[in-house]
Length: 90
Image (cartoon, rainbow, N blue to C red; front, side, top):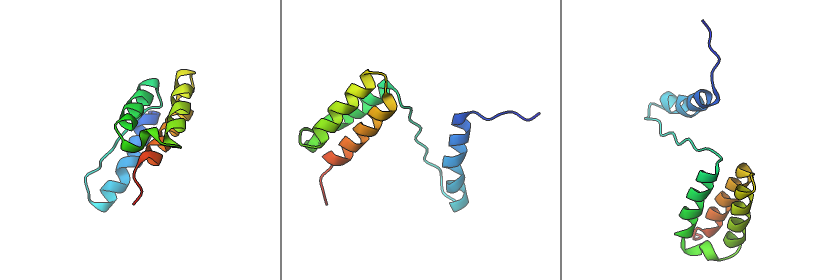
């Protein structure tokens, strides 16, 4: 019997297959675009030294606003950009 694969199963295969091909242990991190994940990203950002500087601050505000208004995918994208912007440059 052929069974249809769910999105998570397909995602797991995509993440794990390259690791097996290289002979290493896979390290999969599956996240969902949800309000909870938005809060997790916001907490991660809050602990960063550059979180209050621009553009990290305004990106985070936009991201949280989008998440709370029912647009978690866009909100997560903005929060991830804020985290990158808050990281010290090398």
